[in-house]
Image (cartoon, rainbow, N blue to C red; front, side, top):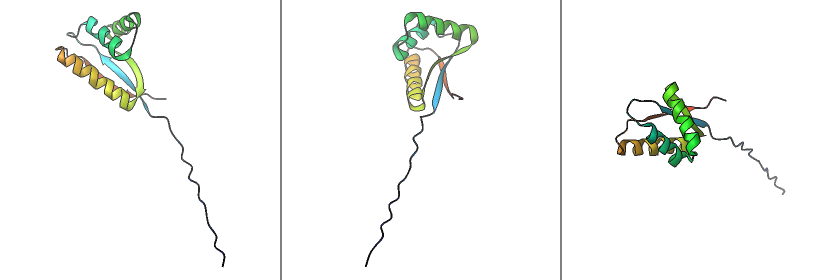
Length: 100
């Protein structure tokens, strides 16, 4: 008596996690110094780059400050929002999927 054994192999295709844009929205109360501080402390930008991004937010009404995988983008957004509220600033942050 012989038996036949079938071996199946699953092919799993790994996909890159979806990337999300972290967008700061301009408001009339959050100071530019505070925005610069958050860009340096939470996103590791240089002072010069943080100043340029802050000017873009101020002039254009919003700016993308980073593009990260969703979970990291969400965490950064929460951390910055909590920091802003604890300093009495209404800084708004939104996440948008990066369209490829």
